[in-house]
Each structure stands twice: as C-alpha cells, then as structure tokens.
Amino acid sequence: MGFSLHLLLLFVHSAICFSGQTFPYMTSDVQEVSGRFFDYIVVGGGTAGCPLAATLSEKFSVLLVERGGSPYEDPFIMDTKHYGLSLLQIDEYTSVAQSFVSEDGISNLRGRVLGGSSALNGGFYSRASEGFIEKVGWDNEGVRDAYEWVESRIISKPDLTPWSYVAAFSFLEAGIFPYNGFSLEHIPGTKIGGSLFDEQGKRCLSADLLQAGNPTNITVLLNATVNNVIFHTNCTGGEKIARGIRFIKSDGSSNRTYEAYLNQQPGNSSTLGDVILAAGALGSPQILLLSGIGPQEHLNNFKIPLVLDLKEVGEGMQDNPGIAVLADSKPQNRTPEPPKVAGITDDFQIIIEAGILPVSLNATVIPIAAKIAFPESVGKLELNNTDPRANPSVAFNYLSSDKDRAQCVKLGQLLERVVRSESIAFFLGSNEHQNKMMSTEDELRKHCKNNVRTFYHYHGGCTKGSVVDENYRVHNVEGLKVIDGSTFLESPGTNPMATLLMLGRYQGVKILEGR
Image (cartoon, one colour):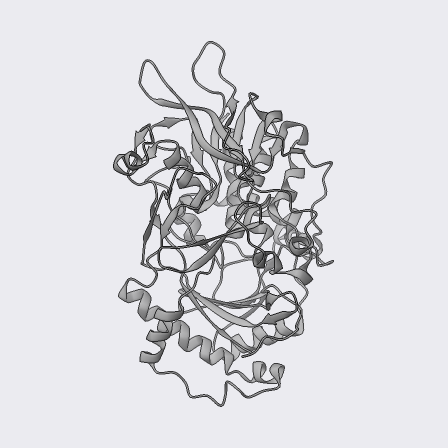
C-alpha cells in the first residue's frame, strides 16, 4: 500500500465533519444581495455547488444562491438515527425535499436545502471507475487530488451494525464476489463504502466544505430561487455574454425579482468570471430554458425571448431504473439505517444496496434494492410553466428498451436470491422468503413493469459535448457554465455523490489555474 493511500485511509477512518475557521456569511434577505457584484455566481448550493464555491473563494468573491434553507438545525437531516425522516415531510415551497412525479408516473425527490441531496441521501460514498474518468476526459492526478480533498474533510469509514453484516453476507450468499472489505473504489464484488455519517452519527454534507474556502469571499443567499440568467450581446461578434442573475424568494410569498451581477473587466463588456449553474439535473436545464437557451419552438410556447436556439437542452435525461423487495413483509419499529454495503455485479451492470428506511415516525421497512447501472432508455426535460419554483416536466422512459427490460429480470432474480439467504432468515427469525417459490421470468417481467422505481440517480439535460464543452462552458455563450450531474451521460460509480463532490472541487481548481 502506497504512503498516500495509507494516509487517505487514516483520514477516512477518523474523519469528523470538517471544521475550519468559520462558515461564510449566510442570509435569506434578498435585498441584502440585490444589486451587488461578484467575481463568480454559483447557482445551487448542493453536492457540486458547495465545493465549487469554496474552491473559487480562495482567490475570488463568490455568491452562492440556494433555493432552500440551512440544514444545520434539522435533526431529521443531521442525526443518523433519524435517517430518511426528512423525506416524509413534503410541502410545496419550504420542505428540504421537493417531490415530483415524472411523466412515467414514478414518484421522485430532489433536494431543496443547503447541501442539496447530500443532506438527504444515504451518504454512501464511492468513487467513479477509472473507465468513467477516462471517458469523461479528466486528468487522473487532478481527480485523485479532488477526491482526497473531499474525503479528508467529510468522509468516514462507517461502523457496521448487525444489519450491515447481514446485508454483506446475504450479497455473498447470492454470489456477489469477491468480498472487498472497506473500499472507496468502484470494483466488482461486495464492499463497504465510505460514509457521510461520522463516528458520532452526525451527517457531514457538502455545505461543510464551505469552511475549506475563504469565508470572507463567500456570500450564501438562502431561500432564493434563480429565475433566469441576465445576458448582454457583444456588439462586435454578436456573442451572448452572461452578466448576472435574476432571483425571487422561494417561499411563494412574492414574485418580485431581484438581480445580482458579475464584475466586468474595466473598459470592456466582458465579465471577469462566470455564472455557474450547479442546480442539478432538473434545475440546471430548467434555468437554461427559462433564460432563453433551448429549443426555439419550445421556448415560443411560453413566450420566452430566444437567446440561443440550443436544441439539446433538456435532452439525454436518464434515471437508473430499480426495483426493490422487502426483507420483512410488515413494518417494524427498527432504527433507520443508511446503506453501508453495496454489491456490484454482472460486469458492473447491476448495483445492489440495503438499508432500513422509515415509513412513519415509529415504523421502518427493510428494502433490498437494485439498479440498472447503464440503462439504454433515455428521456427528456421540458418546462411546465415559467415559475422557477415549480418542477419541470421530465420523462425518463424507464425500461423502454428490450435490453433494460431483460436486465430488470436479472435484477429480480438477484433480489430473490438475496432475500432468500440464510443470513436474512436468521436476522428476521423467519423462513418466510425461503418457503416461497422462485418467480418465473414472465412473472419478473410483469413485476418490473408494475414496480419500477427511481434510484434517485437521475442525470443529463445539459450533457457534456451537446450543451457544454470540455470546460463546461455553455456553447456559444461567454461567462456561463454548468457544473453538476446534468452534464453526465451516465451515473458514475456505485452512486454519483462522490463524483459530484469531486467535480465541484476539480473544476474549481481548473478555473483557478485558467485565471
């Protein structure tokens, strides 16, 4: 084991939520920010946006705009014993999770809180594969440095509970070999991943990384939703230049708009920095469309003035379809528990996890869930209306390809092997599943059709190559970038969180080097 890897494992084993000097200034008063100028404006204080803002603040002034509030006073977010409860309390404007139903009829959620989905999810941390990094075109050294920057601050090696051991043994019984122990890498077999939850059971999240920047250079505007990007047209070349943003209060109390701007170069219409969209796979393409960048015909339907006819905005939407089975047929009063063990099998095509999820304040279930890692089915995002607080319309077209339907049958067969394991029977004190007949392929096809669900790993809409270039700059627009999961053509690793955290740091460093 090399020295740097050994040091990393020490960091990960003992990491407690990063505590730097101070948090940056945070406010929900839109008038405090209205009319001010910044070197960079980052839209979305989520998984990628927070490490990005922290990195840029090392040398430049940054405005970070988050449509939700602070997570730090919410025990449903911060304490592992309350894992999942924040997803049960949903409202239109203020809940930390915003619900949406895709055009496929599948219920889903998106983060609406500082820290984004890293404040809501199971906290399972696993890097992208080497193949993914090569395909995307990142440099290995920069990626490694960015991962380690994140891991040394907010990632821990989890303590395993009885259920964690049961999950690991059940995966092995089902044939998911080898057993890899603790690993941050995306490798075949059964493994323990890193975790956002520290040794005290406290959730670390991307917002903690704001302490790693220069807090005097960051202003965090909470509870404000960006309506659109402000543009200026270059008189000589006719190129569009991003100049700032318009935003409104998130709580639905007012539609009054406010503005914040990028600093300009003296005697020049060009800006010094960028407006950077990090609002996620739904938010970033939605903001581009509301700003007049997208298919002209679609924008005309909403009387949005055209800035750039870019037909690919909203295209390439994907979600990783999954199915789940309940290890226990009835809810019990077990303590909620995020997944700590994953199984990666079928040549990386299938990924399986198992946690304990609440269905109410005093009842939980144990879903064993698996996803198709590389689905063929592709969907599309469009506007429903011009309210930036409302969800856009998105279709993922789950299982619309023959390959995906065949892969889902494999998921079902794997799940049945896992749930019938001796380990789960011993844990439950029941042979309930072992006494059932294995499902036929036809039964599993019907089960997939009727029970396909999200794995919350959706991506696309501003894909790299189609909407943004290799530097994540929106084609033919100066001063506008997209840096988040909307740029991905596929979901990286066991799940995308680790790579989104890395991406914010990695691209922030690239921007600093470029300046």
